[in-house]
Each structure stands twice: as structure tokens, then as C-alpha cells.
Amino acid sequence: MRSDDELYGSFLSGDSAACDELMIRYGDSLTYFLNGYLHNPDDAEDLMIEVFARLIVKRPKIGEGNFKAYIYRSARNLATRFHEKKIRTQMFSLDEIGEKGMEPALSGDGFADDERRKILHICLGRIPPEMREALWLFYFEGMSYADIAAVMRVNKKRIDHLLSKGRDRLKRELEKEGVTDAVE
Image 1: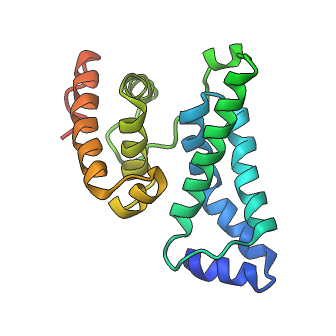
Image 2: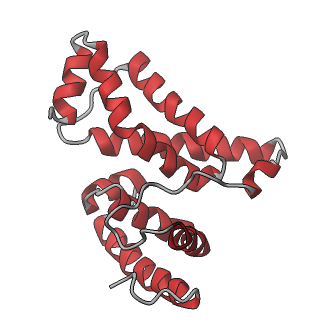
């Protein structure tokens, strides 16, 4: 399997299939990440497409090993602007109530059944957004502290703090729901 850097380099050299492969590789996880901000799967998918559209049009120089952090930072920035614009226009949507299909495939992590997935999603929603984002990027996206720090624009020490406190808060929330074997 080609690395992100190899694929992006191929794309910059004219191989449009390489960009398609990057979109396939990151599209779903980026959409889930964006949905954590927007609480609307349709808007999240639209912004995910916009992240890649901007990548195709602007063709930015991305440092070696930073592709994933770059697209997540771009997605976060777009989501923030989108959310602020939505607030400024005083719009709201009833679609936020029925958030279906938001949970990623959580295979192999101890949350095999749908009920436990729902509980995890509910509990994640109860913790502060900054902690939730750090946990999501670390556990679901497999990002390093350095990459998470780049996405969230904070230092690594702050990421360590957010992950530590976030795990504690998530564990307490899960315990309230009767899940005692999920967080170690």
C-alpha cells in the first residue's frame, strides 16, 4: 500500500486516481470527525468533499508525513467557519435530533453490539468538545500526539492533558450507563 506522501506526490504529478485513493482512504473517517462538530451527517459529508475539492484546486505543499494532519486541520477549520456562519444566520435544523449512521465501524474495540455503540456515542457527547476531539483523533483516527496537536493547534502537553482527563470523564460517563469494562 502506498503512503499518503506517495499518493499525494503522484496526484501533484498528474495522477488523479491517487487523489481518489486518498479520498477513499480518509473520506469516511473525516466525515465522522466533521459530524462531531456539526451533528449533521449531510453537512459533514459536504464539508468532507469540500476539503478534498480545496486540496485538488489549491494543491498545497504539505510536509512529509503531515497529510493526515493537514486534511483534519482543514476539516476542523471548515467546520468552525460553517458553524459560526450557521449561528450568525440564526438557523437551526431538526435533523440534528435524528443522528443516524454517525458511528464508525468499531470493530475489535469491545463495543461489538449496536446498544454499546449508542451508549459510547451518547457518553462522548457528554464530555467537553475539546476532550472529545482529542479522544476521537487518538483512538479512532490513530493520530500521534504531534498530529493531534497540529490539528487542534495546541501543544503536545495540552493533548496529553486532554486525553488523560477525557479518558477519565468518558470512563465515568460509561459507568453511569452500566458499562464498566470499556475503558482501561
